[in-house]
Length: 295
Image 1 (cartoon, helix red, strand yellow):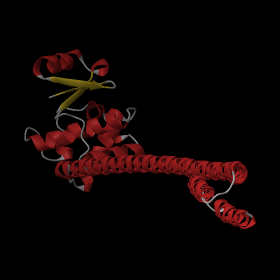
Image 2 (cartoon, rainbow, N blue to C red):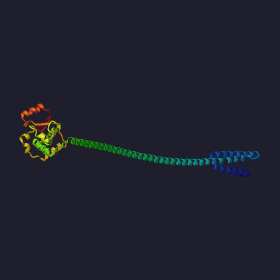
Image 3 (spheres, rainbow, N blue to C red):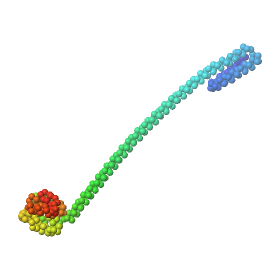
Image 4 (tube, one colour):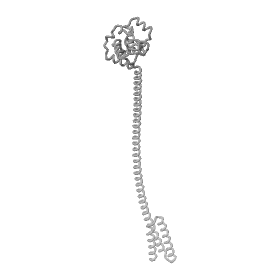
């Protein structure tokens, strides 16, 4: 009897040691195996002549420790499960925090990149605007310079043509004719402005070129009944001014405002017969100062 009990205890201790290292499922399988082995052993000894008291004691001894061990193992396994769950939760929380941190960092980087791109676009727009303004200013400056150059050329061309016209209309006279021209202009237009003096000189020179009058200044001026200063002798007493000389020189160089006039008259100082002749026989052109011009 003692030997059988010792054997059963050893078997139970063996399976108990194994149960600590296995999972719940394996533990249950081992318990079933152990229980089955115990039952077989009891049946074997029962059939060999053991009493009912021994059989009942053996069955109770085999079942009671197994139930206690299963409860302890389940408690240990529950603690391990809870611990594993806590570890899993901790890892999950850490992973979430790491993801949130990485996400926040990524969002910050994206925002910084967008701000940088925005600043870059603003700088590019500002540069393009400045370039456009510079190009427009350059274009306007070039157009202004071109217009100024064209105007300068036009002025030069006009001046050149005027000089050519003056050269074409210029008249060369002898020194005697020059002195006569100075005196008649001074006598007829000494109180007139520059244009009035030049007009009187133009009329004298136009007569020389017309072919209807003598071809010298003296011949034109001293023709009978043509100029009152010659008739009354005032031509011989006048003092020629520098202004008059300058106006005569301008007329000789080709400055002409006469429109081809061959006659002039001061209506307030002329005889009525001369006035009627001018009005009836000549073509009126214009008036400057007190002189009316005809041809």
